Amino acid sequence: MIIWGIIAIAILIVVHEAGHFVAAKSMGVGVEAFSVGFGPILLRKKIGETEYRLSLVPLGGYVKLVGENDDAESSKEAFSFSAKPVWRRAVIIAAGPITNLVTAVGFFVLSSWIGIAVLSSHIGTVLKDSPAYNAGIQKGDRIIKINGINVLTFKKMASIIKKNPGKHLRVLIDRSGTKKTVIIIPGLKKLKNIFGEEKPAGFIGVMPYGDKVLERYSFFSGIKNGVYQSYRITYLTIESLIKLVDGEVSVKQLGGPVMIIKIAGNEASAGAGVFLFFLAIIGINLGILNLLPIPILDGGHLFFLTIEAIRGKKLSDKAISISQQVGLSLLILLMVFATYNDLMRFFPHISSAVNSLLHK
Image (cartoon, rainbow, N blue to C red; front, top):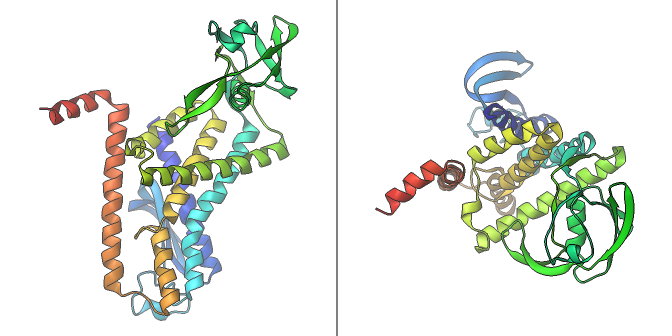
């Protein structure tokens, strides 16, 4: 399980650094080193100007650009990063997170083609006096269509019902090989969304049987679904950040590396399609996080370049250094807090021990 989590993190960060690498090459900037992993170097091979490295810690990688630190000697070279105009440097910096976002589309598409095992529309439990119960739905029925729309999964069925409270729905069911059409009028109640907010939605009062079907898309449908999922997750991620800042979403929902490793292991065991879907989600989160205007992140560097473009000259080394120290401190605090949340979430005995200490 842990190994799959490490692989997931390594893939996403190496993809990120590869974006910087390719952009630097295309912008005429020399790359001194490209490392898979960081820490002590295990293997190294120089090809042209670049030394390719395999390092000990597999949780990512890094790219070392010529003139990246703006030292006097290297900055004079024609292929130095610091000698390039603002727009070229901006392209190189933005390429990392953008590559994460673009790659996520590919992961979603591959996941759609491979397929994901999801709960079928087979009904397991029918709540007494619910709309489904009153319409004659029974345990063991399989929902086939709703208002002419094919329904193979419980997720698809639920999404249609949630959007149609109070409306007459023509539901085609399969009961032991016999097809039958019933009319169901979904009730209305408040259900919690992914942010924990209560929103009105339609319901009919059924639970899944538990069997699964493989939800797989054709070639072009998979591409369409991949693009749609990328848009949906990007939108939800940005919305989550806004709600987090506004206080509408609790900071206790933040997850860190422990959560990523644990979930990655679970998803990998559920199949390649699920693991790729998970990679895409984390890739989008990584891309958006890196675009935030926080010093030390790519978004912070882009913010500095924007100021440089407006002023016509770079910020002082002192101003940049101080802001980066502040940004690093904030990121460390965020990581510590996220890791604390992970420990409280996944290791109840640690949570109990901490709570007992806090309440003494």
